Image (tube, rainbow, N blue to C red; front, side):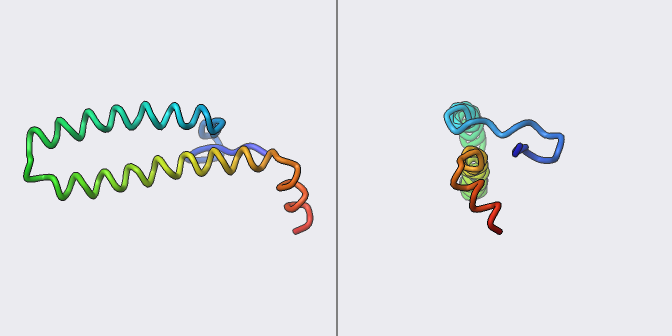
Length: 84
């Protein structure tokens, strides 16, 4: 079974270790942008905080998809899927 992001033709979901590396890179880039935004406009903190929470949710979704893809390859899940 293949798991892809965004659509049937999207990129393959990476293994969890690689997903964590990608998440770490994305988070580092986000952090730079968030710090710059806050430095430019400290009054935007409340809006920025909501945006940060949303970004972390999306990053968590990436890891969940990766874990699901990994689990789908395990015999126990395949057997359970056959039974349903």
